[in-house]
Image 1 (cartoon, helix red, strand yellow):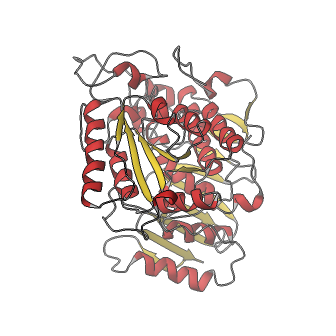
Image 2 (spheres, rainbow, N blue to C red; image 1 turned 45 degrees about the vertical axis):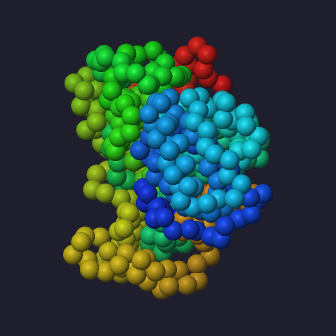
Length: 452
């Protein structure tokens, strides 16, 4: 069970970072003995941004990188070496490249790891790192399935390590203020939340392509079933796009678990539901027919209902919209709008709104939250929040409690899409209710040699 107090449930916060942070320094250079030493697992497009961000903090030293693609791994190693060649760092002893993370985790001189592998590797690498005594920054969604979300949360609590989920919208001011408005009752009793994200994943049906040298394909598959190589899943070498593995259920969860992990996370935060979740899931009509003709990516409209009657509905249109009895709060990256009693109070949404988004959410903060009883963790940089919490040993803004809860919400919707059935869920006991959904849907069959 993902244990959490009411105070913790209302304390999950916010700070943003672009894909590649500017090469500014967050703080003064720390003494070598006080630096946080880091290793990186998975060196694709997302990890390059994270690596750049952590390198930009003088209190961090990067000692190792790991990837199953030798070209990406070598490129990451070179990036680190070039950085430290230009910015002399006392005590730095070089960057080692690894083809498997077990060797990296065996090192006693690494304090923390950053994990940005495909989703089907997240939980295995995270649990191994936690058990090896490392603090972990892991990309969202935190896990590939519900069983893994529970396992990761339990392991964090058992080991006492720090885990930050890469749900960086919690470190953006517009999202934090939007959630505080909701939690403090500014728009009245919440009726519904519309969250914008895409459809579910489908089984891998990609044709076989010629294998290219430099990629350990068997290791890339890892816990997933054996499959023929296709470059759409793991394009060779250094590339600038996000590969298609997210669209296939063996490796990811489609739009439901990709951007859904961001938007559902904000819904959970604003509803004060970290550590909990919905009690029933309803798929939209036509699910089985859509899967039959491979149109599942176009599916939309799944609904999750909470015990208090609030419905989170999968929608299109962008962002997250909280609908209350006295108004609405709508928020997206760089966009923010508050409507009270039918009148717009603050707005920065379209380009023609020639105002700064910060001016609008700060206006709402100043005028509508002056006497707020509930305040969320204020993080202004997701990576810095993780590093600060390594030092303080406090829960970060997107801890395992938030990350696991959000992942479970996304996976519940994925189950509804896969089965085409409505079902009930007990978020406290983390079990299915009724017998119309097999418990096997909560996990996956791990390939021999993998698993927990």
